[in-house]
Image (cartoon, rainbow over all chains, first blue to last red; front, top):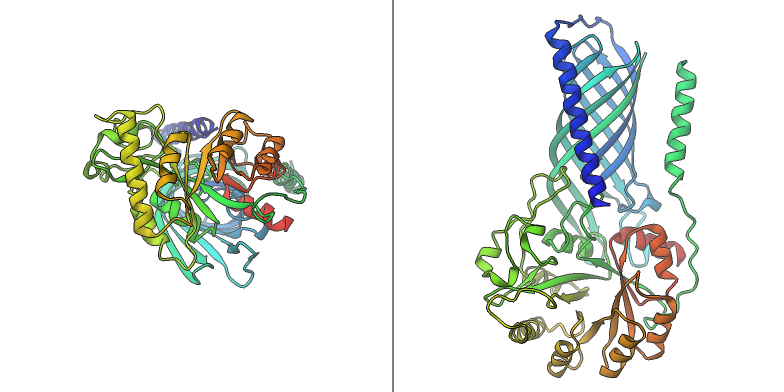
Length: 191
Length: 295
């Protein structure tokens, strides 16, 4: 199974490289249309692999010229974080588009994701407290339009995570931190 | 395609993805020698490394987290002895399997081993911050807890390189090292020792008669009888090898059973149905949730 994950990751990296070539090609042909001055709204269905593994988020985004902000609820699909008690969180971030083609755009992204879930002890889930994981990543990615409104975006990045767990046996809070990463694919509809 | 129909099909796809993995947890009344309660033990920490668990097994953070953060009843740690007699937490035979070092752990001194960093093949955790750690680093902390967790030491000896030592000499040094650790931390009640070598366990038994010893069993029912005959506390076995009837036979001889090799929801449900006393799981949180919902 681990090899399957490894091959999936390699496939994803190749996809990113392929999109990079597409972007470079479109940029070299000088297709850099001006963005409209008005704001554009979009719905993005994000799928991410980060330190906390797989998650899905439905985000609403607003784009103005070269900037786009997005935010929405996030559901962590990794059952190592007590699925009975969530775990829900938020994904939000900012994209900046330095390069634009007719259908393909590259962007730099600052992405933040968190998730909250109930701490466990051998007798109960402690309902009055929350454990949390926060992940910050700096990413680079591409958007590709398949029609005037529908498209796909993908990005890869690295960053840090911090975790906050309640050690119910000792009655203290434990903090852990480390390097994180981000692989993300999103399907968007711009309207 | 209109926006409405696009969103409708998006929802259908999302719902099918979310519910495809659902399985109703049906758990019968557990009957075992542990007060009819299955204890949750993290396998090498919070479980073997994967994309959903990116901490290397037997790493310091993984072992600390399973007790401090996940509140497991215990943790299983794989143990090997360095050439200068320090106990290290590491599972694989060769160092290059999981670290940036190479060779066999028993061939190398602790000073060199302490510099070795865990690798990670899962891209996300490219910059690993985990190093090879001695057993003392976690026992120092566990021994200070109000209730020290159960620490299952899986002694890695059979079929390995032992540096300049013979197998017998390595085993003697391992026995001395384990014995010294148990004395130092006054840990006879919370350290459990697992090995496939009955002679090694018997030697430990002569030094610490209260120590809980687990015989690594592979053939049934012969190994159950062997464990009962030697007065071992229990047997440890792979989930693929053991059946409910074997567990019942072990219990009838007063031998406890610990099962490893479980990660999925269906795997946990099947293992619980065998009535073991301990499950060494690769998904601590999921097992806790199943047992909590059942209780």
